[in-house]
Amino acid sequence: MDPISEILVPIAICCVLPIMLVWFVIRKKMNETNQRTQIVLAAIEKNPEMDIEEIMKKISPKPRLLKEKLLTKLLWGCLAILLGIGLIGTGAWMGYVGGSVPDDIYAVVCSGLIALGVGIAFLVNYFVGKKMLAKEIEAEEKGVTEQA
Image 1 (cartoon, helix red, strand yellow):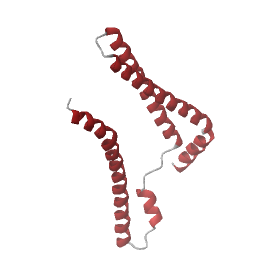
Image 2: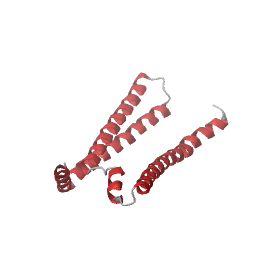
Image 3: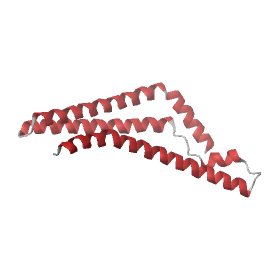
């Protein structure tokens, strides 16, 4: 690899990529807010006596329930654990077959251990959150069924 690309690739991956991701997320949220504002303004222009709070409730995104948030943590925990196990297995296979650079094997195994640790943290967060928020989840479910 060229010496310039050895410097530019890590800079692009570690600096530019995260900044672009944050910028895209913020831009998406701003566009959604602007669209909701335009809808409300158009509704006010057509009918000034319209209830604005009711319109805002209808067009605003629904908040996620606690149960949905916990299930998302369970999903990400399982995926991270599977990824970690896969990477550790790949590192073990690379070491068993041979011919790989030891630094590459260590990098793959360390990445697998990190992913495994993140997955375990998500699962612990899911089970602790499920236990601690059981009453709130039950009350939320009752509220949702009463509204339906």
